[in-house]
Image (cartoon, rainbow, N blue to C red):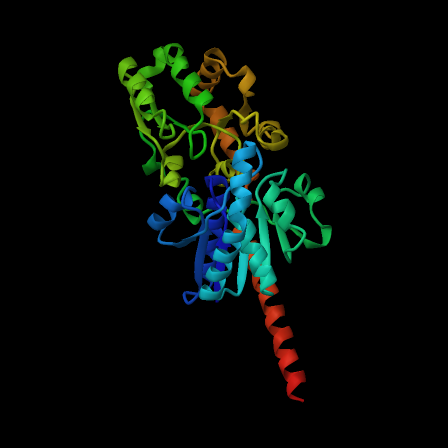
Length: 374
C-alpha cells in the first residue's frame, strides 16, 4: 500500500512524519511512502539521508508575513494545487497524512478532492493555521494532547495518540557504552538553533569554570551561530563539539546526562521517550505560548527544570547546571519521571487508525462493485 506524508518545513513537523513512515514500512516490506514538502524546508536536506523519497511543491506561508509576502504566497496557491494533484495522480496513494507546515495544505486538500482517505497529525496543544483549516475536511485528526488542541477540531474526528517518535530514539537508551566519563550536556534550540540559548550558554561558561575539566558540551547552534559558538568554546578552553545541525540526534541523546533546549512538542516527546533530564527554555513567541505549557507538564512532574526566556540569565542557567552536576541522584530521579511521561506507541496507533480507515474504504468499494454487478 502507498502513503503520502505531506508537510514539514521544521523538524517539529517533519520528524513525527518520519516516525509514522518508519512504522508504515515496518508493517509490510511492500509498502511505500512518499514525502511532499518544499525546496526550502528542512525535509530537502534531511530526507535523502534517511532514505526517503521527496517530491516538492511551490508554496509559502501567510501567518506572520508582510503584506508583500502574503500576496506572493497567495499567488502561488493555484500552482501548488496543480503540482499536488500531479503528484497524487502519479504516485496513486491509498492514504494522505498531513503533518503540519505549508506543504500539507494543498496536498491534503487535493487528496480529499480526489476521494482519498486523509488525516492530519497535530503535534502542539494549539494547532497551526493549516491544520485548523484541514481539520474541517479530513477523515481523522491525530492529536498529541487530550486537551488543548481538541477544542479546535470536530470532536468526532479526533484520536489522541501522542506525538510519534522515530525508532532510533526508542532503542538502546540505557546503553552505558554511549556515555563518556565527563558530565555531558547537549544544547540545542530546534533545527535552526536558538539565539537566546546560544548567547546565555556561552555567557555562563565563566560560572562553570570550576567544573570545566569534568564537562563535555555538545552544541547544535544553527547555521548562523556555528563559527561564533565554536570560537567561544575554544577561547575558554571548554571541551565541546559544535554542529550547525545534528542529523543523528538519537545518538547524541544517548551520550547526554543533561539537555538544555526549547520545549517544542517533538522535543518533549523525544526527551520523555529517551528518559532524559532537561533544562527547558520555552520559545516565548510560539503560538499561544504553547511551549511553556509543554514545559510545565514536565516541570510539574519533576522531570525538568523550567526557565522562562525572560528569566534566562548566565546566573540562572549556571545554577541549574551546577545543582544537577552536584546531585546525580536528582538526575536519576528526573530521568525516571521523564520516562513515565513517554508515549512510545504513537506512530503505531496512527498507522492502526489509518489502516482501519483504508480497510473500511476498500470494503465499501467492494460492496459497491458487488451491488453494481447484481
